[in-house]
Amino acid sequence: MKYDVIVVGGGPSGLMAAIAAGEKGARVLLIDKGEKLGRKLAISGGGRCNVTNRLSIDEIITHIPGNGRFLYSAFSEFNNEDIISFFEKLGVALKEEDHGRMFPVNNKAQSVVDALIDRMKDLKVTVFTNSPVAEVIYENGETAAVRLKDGQYFETKAVVVAVGGKSVPHTGSTGDGYAWAKKAGHTITDLFPTEVPLLSDEPFIKQKTLQGLSLRDASLSVLSPKGKPLITHKMDMIFTHFGISGPAVLRCSQFVVKAMKKWGLSHVSMKLDALPDQNKEELFQQVIREVKAEPKKAVKNIFKGLLPERFLHFLLEKSGIDLQEQGGAVSHDKFRRFAELCKDFQFTVNGTQPLEKAFVTGGGVSIKEIHPREMGSKFMNGLYFCGEILDIHGYTGGYNITSALVTGRLAGLNAATYTSKK
Image 1 (spheres, helix red, strand yellow):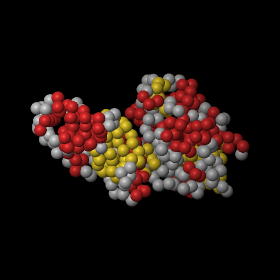
Image 2 (tube, one colour):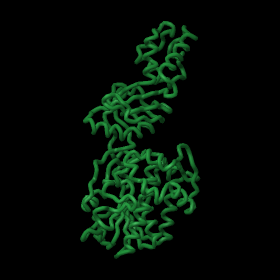
Image 3 (cartoon, rainbow, N blue to C red):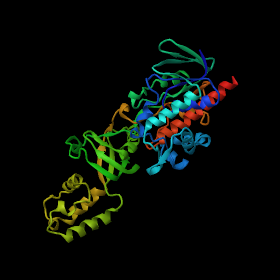
Image 4 (spheres, rainbow, N blue to C red):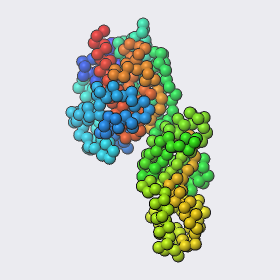
């Protein structure tokens, strides 16, 4: 059997690539090793599917710290507003939530998946599920065929590799595409987990002192060996039995991995500011005012409501203050120490949960070897890459799906254009 374009992988980038190629009039085959298409898409955004983000292009790029700048050319061809129009034309009404995040009005990720699948049916895209690919075959510097593990062989002039990275493997992302990329001469940059919880062997973590405690709108920083913040995120976080998690932590995680690698560290320091809207001196003066107002009251009661109770007690004890002691009997030095810890509580982390537990894979096919407007290989004619297999990684919040849909669109369009000229 012969097809104009074969897309390998039925995630967001693969579905978009198949549709784009089909809209160009190409005869398209989409192959996926899983039973269902769009499995990662169906569970994204807590099952609601954050399809894109409505921030400006520049802001979206800053939210894709892993080589986001590579996408400027792609966004000039197809961008987040185009994604919104695309889904609305398919009958998926979208709504905007906090920080520009776009969700289907019905809050059902499956409706996004179904709309993509229906569009492929309209375009008569052939779909093979439960069909793992054994290899992509190249001849004389161009793609020639795809062979399945069951022996089936399909000739083609263009292959779009959209198999994802190695994160969330139960959705089918197990890193199959790296070998096909290497065979075509591509470099695979070091793979690492991003958007992943962090591990800590600090005594307070091991003793589960703060396990299950959430902090809202805390400011969390990753520090260099010299104590300089490498990145700071002000979002929610949670202490766990193994370390820390939550949105602020996930966003900081890739910077922890990069710091460990850059400086050869076994532990990286983190700085937590639990009250980021006040400076240290303002907070200290507030503490003193509250003590003077009720000097006979137990310290733990004076500051009730300043912080979540367990964290308040933890920081008071770290400051050498007895929780039951009357406020008027505690030295100013101890209260200054308490105010400092509220603003600058430092602890170390010693790694991340494994790549399989990450939301996003860092690393992948080197973007230096990909044409930024076409998503085509610089080494092999007719070979295209899109989505998470590329060395592009962003924060959660619709940024990775935006990258996947944009790169998928361009890969599919250009694969179809390429075959039409052959």
